[in-house]
Image (cartoon, rainbow, N blue to C red):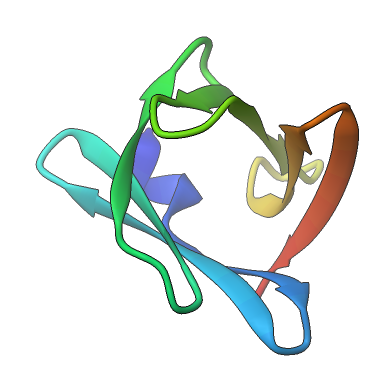
Length: 82
């Protein structure tokens, strides 16, 4: 199930976050930053231990992930899957 979240998500034309799967652990790596693990809260919502943020993956009507929303600092940031 975690495999469907793997990919590159564009926050801006010059800033993206790459999500990878290593074993059964999902990782995130933003442009110019270190890779870090993210942890599940539910089937589609994850949290970070390195920052106070939550990642919510959204699927289309066929069940494919098409974007995510990063909830951080009281704001929501939509990132489209590339």
